[in-house]
Amino acid sequence: MAIGFSGKPYQMLASWEDASYRDVYLLDFKAGLRKQMLLKKAFTVDLSPEGKYLYWYEGGDKAWYLLDLAKSLIRCLTCLSWWLSIMKNMTLLHPGPIWNCRLDQG
Image 1 (cartoon, rainbow, N blue to C red):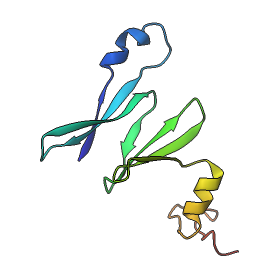
Image 2 (image 1 turned 180 degrees about the vertical axis):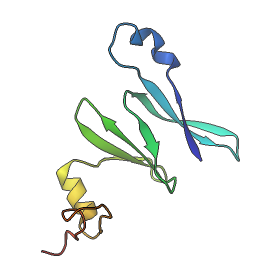
Image 3 (image 1 turned 120 degrees about the vertical axis):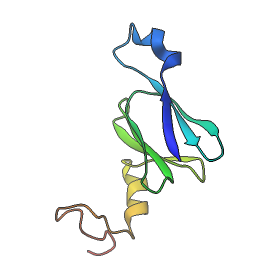
Image 4 (image 1 turned 60 degrees about the vertical axis):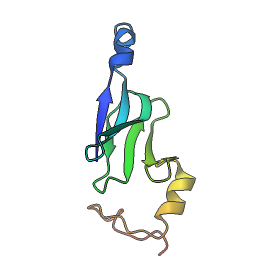
């Protein structure tokens, strides 16, 4: 599983806007399939190491998003209410004292 990009639909738009947009595709090399997942993204979109999620930054709302590929569900990672509900029972593995804690332990 991999991701691919195409900026072809936005080539003319890029000549008068200060952004280069791309559509994002999920590529399945074994099956020989390409599926369009996201449209007109200005920032980098990445695939999670396990291949379960796409994640990206949206400059307009200054937020990070996640697309669950199995459920076709998009979530805002930096919207506080959703973030806290997901992270409540998880340990974040990031260096530094703030992130190495469990949110369900005072």
